Length: 298
Image 1: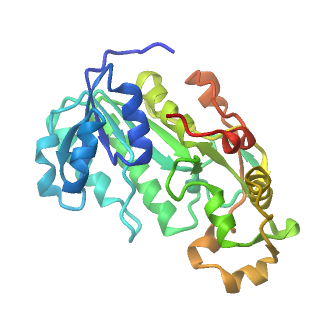
Image 2: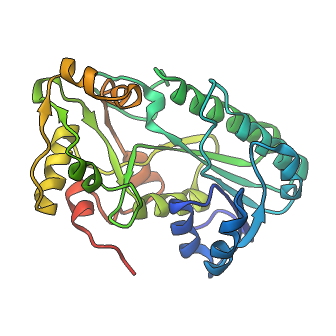
Image 3: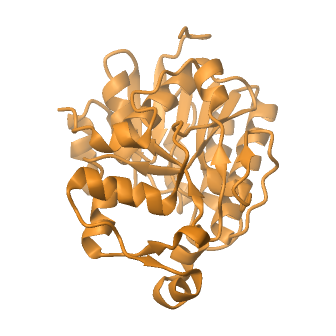
């Protein structure tokens, strides 16, 4: 994988678990800035090798110092919890545009923008059809970053990401759900689900920062073909835990929250050809079984 341009300074916006994994991969080669809204996190970001910047995407007046500080931006911050537009991304892009320095921007979106595909195989040419306000906010953010690329001349790439997991990711391993005894759908009602190991996602972010094409979308998922129940049964077997109970969709309606039910209403199988062939990323964990069996790397 070769870089198409020299990037001197990277700004990570939303430097949580995945951002920290990216930081560990790039801190020896790039100057990395990390935006945080929490003063308590600044020391941890500095210890990890970043220059910590304090600012809040919900308070645009705090973002002024971001203008002109970075050649590249990795935008990992989620949209707001309400509404159908992403004012956080709007505020960020306004200040970046004012600085006029950014030549490359990678935005982490979600495969949820595709909506329910009724189990069909899909790729990046599938038109977004968001069925929740959460996904609509992501579509809005994608539209905003694309526009930023057109008016600024920056290379903008979009990563559409499914469920993220890793043994050392807080709340990001199926073990937690298995220990709670949360049920899954019965086989006849079940939906296809897609996943990516957090380390492979971090590597995909790095690949896109180096070689992402302008206005290009990349699905960032592994090559597994699994329904949700099978995924949790696989995790249970690997963890030595009982398999999750199965319930019908009607039973699930009375047991799950509206957000949980929204995930059970969408079924899709996602191609990752662009990730593998265009970004030339060789996944460390090409299947969920390999990723779930992997131990954290120190």
